[in-house]
Each structure stands twice: as structure tokens, then as C-alpha cells.
Amino acid sequence: MRGGRNRPSRRAAEPLIRVDPDFEHEFPGASASATECYANLVRTGDLLIGLHNEQARADHGLSATGKQALAVIEGAREPLEPGVIAERLIITSGSTTSILDTLERAGLVQRMPHPEDRRKLLVDVTDEAVAIVDELLPSLHQRERTIVDDALTPTEQRTLIELLAKVQASIADHAEDPPARGARRVKRGNRRG
Picture 1 (cartoon, rainbow, N blue to C red):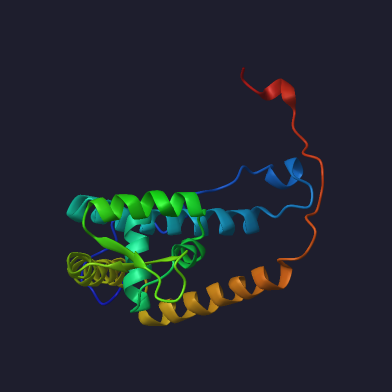
Picture 2 (picture 1 turned 90 degrees about the horizontal axis):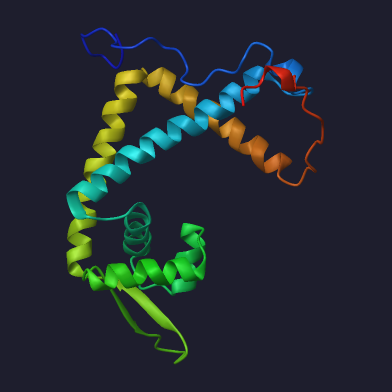
């Protein structure tokens, strides 16, 4: 039983992504376990974000980035410059312009002159966008709870957070490390062509 429910799990607790048994031979210096952790962490995040994105598109016709842009702007509780939106979404200014154009045509954001600099604009959400965010975000968070509570006990959830924090700290610690270079060992005769 997981998450206090009285029903058995429908699936085996096996990771979605496994590497081949000869992985460490093919990639000298690699770790099969580390690669499986990395690949499954990314896959899990992709699956969860995919569910959120599907719901935003189905319920409100929002693209993944449009949903994120509305959440960023509404969450700021004040109008933002397009450059700030681009930074927070980690996208280019050209992509931001395209997203804002789409959201503006849908009546979800409005551009207005910057009060201190005539060369700049500010972007704010409309009342319609606030209503969408107010309905969408609680629904997404409820889905997160359902999925995580079904899979993990409260103790396992705390452990997962602690483990993810360790991985995030290690990423920060090694962000400036030069990449290790090595050669792949592969038998070309075994490939299908």
C-alpha cells in the first residue's frame, strides 16, 4: 500500500530507463547507476510536466510556455518587462515576443508603456488570465499530490526531497568543472544498418 490507500500498486517499482549490461565497458569512466539515476530523474520530470502541459492545453488552449509565462507574470504580482519574463522562462527574447503576442491575441496579457522609460514596455496579466491561473494551478497541485501520495509515503517524500537537494547541490558544486573527455568503445560490426 502506498500513500495510505487500500489498493495494491498497479505497477512494479522498476525504473523506466535501464542501461545495457555492458554500459560501463562501452563508456569508460561512466557509471551505469549514475546514468540510470540521471535518465530516470529527467524522465520522471518530463512525465509530470507533460501531464501539466496536457491539462493546460486541454482546459485553456495554453501552450507549455504560455502556461509558464502566465504563471511567471501573475506570480510576480506586478507588471514585468519582457526581458525579465525571458530570463525567468529561460528563453530568448524573440521567443518571448512570440509567446506574448499569442497571449495578447487571446486576451490574457496586455502590454503597456513603462512609466519611467519610454523605450520599454511592461506586461501584465488580464483578469481573464488571473481567473485561468486561479483555476489551473490548484488543479495541477492537486494532481501532483495524487501522484506523489500514491507513489510515496510521507517519509519517502521527505527522503526524496533530501536526496534531490543533494543532487542539486552537487550540480552547483560541479557546474564549473571542465567536462571529462573520453572515447566510446563500441563494436561497429554489431550495429544494424
